[in-house]
Length: 130
Image (cartoon, rainbow, N blue to C red; front, side, top):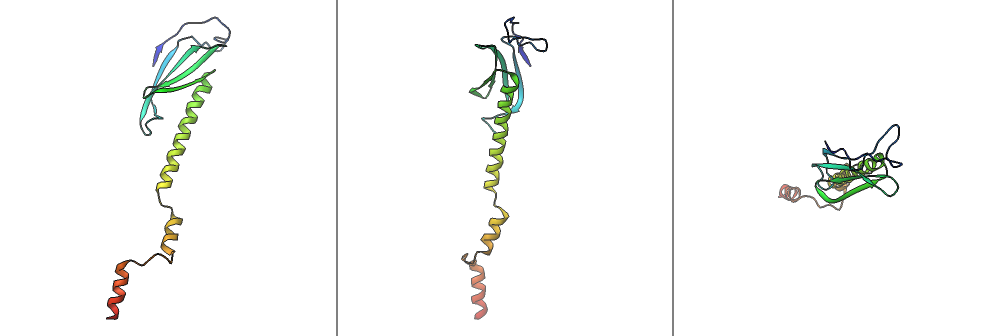
């Protein structure tokens, strides 16, 4: 959703034949993955601000007031956010895998001769001798 159309700037870097970057342009994109609350969604806001040498593109997040990404072009700033989502997904996958027992570990535990037999197996052997 566009919040502010911004103001046209005639300075170098803010326009060309194929693009225009109005200072103050602001839009919100909702229902994107939250970095602060994995599994939830949030709203990200992107804004074009005046930089020292041309436009700067910023992204902020509604569920994390300290979150801010910035780059000199929109592809880079959204690329940074995409990489953060991919990193978060990778961390979550690794965490899930670490919590699940692997088949190799289950087989090793089952075939370990130092593992004591369950008490019921020991008791049934003693009962058969009587």
